[in-house]
Length: 99
Image (cartoon, rainbow, N blue to C red):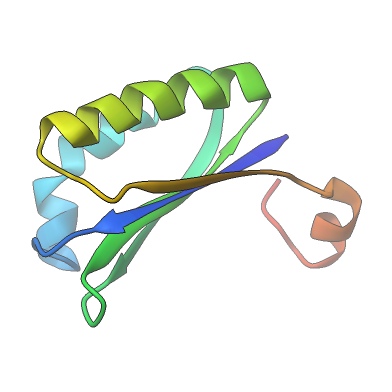
């Protein structure tokens, strides 16, 4: 499994308002090929948002990252940061990761 971390500057709604505003997007993301799960992240103090994603394989992750980056950029988002990691599933299981 592979982990994708994305964050970017964001000064829009957060919390419950974000959940309501992005409900349809969340439903769409849940259907992405190879996605195991996504954790939505937000920080009102630093005005950042993003997510932690777990994908079954690198090919699915890279396809999603390319598509999502284009989607964000088309909405005017700049300063997008992404990192890709391998997941140590053995250690993660010990520390209760939902894998």
